[in-house]
Image (cartoon, rainbow, N blue to C red; front, top):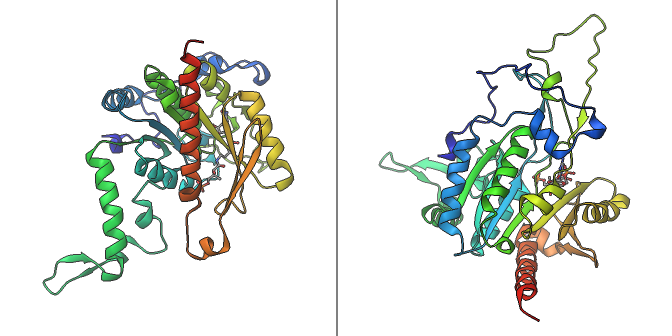
Length: 343
Ligand code: PMT
């Protein structure tokens, strides 16, 4: 059961392995060198088995989406007390996953452990405690309060459908290293499937910097006489190109770009497209991300915005833009079929 994999525990068996080769200087480390100089998470074979079963169940029958969600951490100590985190509650990924499932996809949800999950998100991270949704009836039985009955029944029905049909696989991560190893594994395991029917939808916020294994402190960093802590971080190699070119060529890849300065957003999205050669970048600003996104391709930039009425009615923007994503995925599959037709 994926729920039993714990990703936020230090690796006790090998608390610090000084035998790993020293990582080369940051400017020359490549994607493959990264994997030579860091260790895979111990639980990876378990995930491999679950993914194999999932792929066998759905391959050829329906489209598969890999949705990444939540922020990755960068531990500063091997026995981790302190870490650097990336902003993301997991709302985008969890909400989008519900939309993909409702539109016939099977979804592998690669998410930060304890961030928002599809369906349970409606009750787990609200300002209410989940117990506030319940009450005792006259017979002393715990029941859902009348005001929540309708919504909860609808959510429960969708959740049960996804669960009973085995359409949703939950795969957790905490650190950036776990994320990268697991993403590569998923791409490799999905490769035998008809690649164009596989969609990678990368909504996770991935750390750009990390502390290499060879330099990480074993124990909690102690405060020194100067009182300052100077942290020396290396850049995480850009893995998107690997994903596009070698891990799963032919799949449709969508990445996100988060910025806070509106003036930078479009140029950053275009830069990502040029650098990685994938199909679509969805740009969003931290301040307006729940109401507006922009679809950027080589050809154009198309904004998707909620109207004021939709905002007042608490419409979730994913319910508006995921159907457009699916439409683009259909066009992409058609274009790949045409490429195979004899002239
Ligand atoms: O979860 P919420 O609170 O709802 O927030 C959603 C969100 C704002 C986090 C989401 O909509 C979003 O924008 N996610 C992407 C954030 C971002 O800009 O990530 P990034 O700059 O770390 O990465 C951009 C893309 O490059 C990612 O798709 C990632 O897969 C890729 N990347 C990043 C780092 C790296 N070393 N290699 C990569 O390939």
